Image (cartoon, rainbow, N blue to C red; front, side):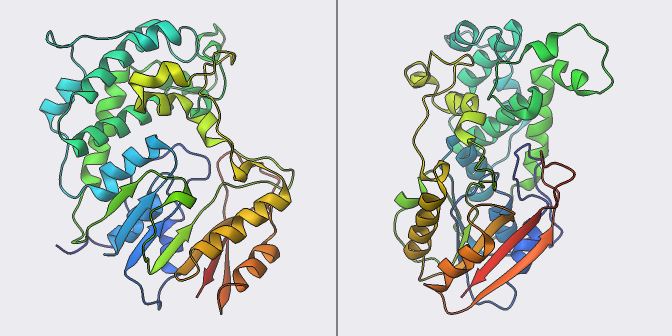
Length: 350
């Protein structure tokens, strides 16, 4: 089956650094290159993988976060399964034959959501885990994740800040209405938003959940690399910290063993990462990454200004590729300071 029209349409995302608004521009920079198979090594929201899928490429999505993997399973690997009204009703209703734990209610009281919302989440994740079709299950998880994010201040879980929702103060913005809208309504909305994005492009697309250096070795014509960004001040977003609650939902049975109970927000125990270290180590990590995928066309997204510099990355790429072109596009990122002029930089290395 051929891919649909080129008009780009993808689910809304609430992630800082999302490439949703840049995905078409990124894919357009590959015009004239001969390639068919694509690896999206740091897939994130899946928007770039989805853009490649729309133009008929064979796409392998990868991301270290399990919650992101499920979104890609639902919208990149999945080619035909959609959620029906029966599926939605199953998720949002209690069933006599099921036993409902109350882990979220007991563990996260007064941290992220109201008590009744925690009870609803325990029910919903239990129902979703009993769905038999893995792609429908992934779609339901995606809708649940988005519902959790939209009801959180700053769309993240890095702080214990339920009080921002509950404070009895005069409000001049509409976030309060969003936060208080019931989970069931949001879940249905995001499910129905995702359904039209499911299509078959005639290729065998895959979603994977590995550290980038543990992706099973195979030949890809093109590798797209969008690694974690580090500012010139040395600051970077810890995605595992920001989305630890969603990662816990993915591992509901073992969630309790993974929590750092010394943290105020019951976050997951943090894993070490070479992307959260000093300048020299980050440069060595980039070099190791380029060496690993040197036999493929390399398409590298970067945000400027950042660490390493654009010049340094170009030099590292030139150690392994004959030709390195640099493309720039002015772009306003979520959470960017208005006074800072940012650019999306794309290296096309062949």
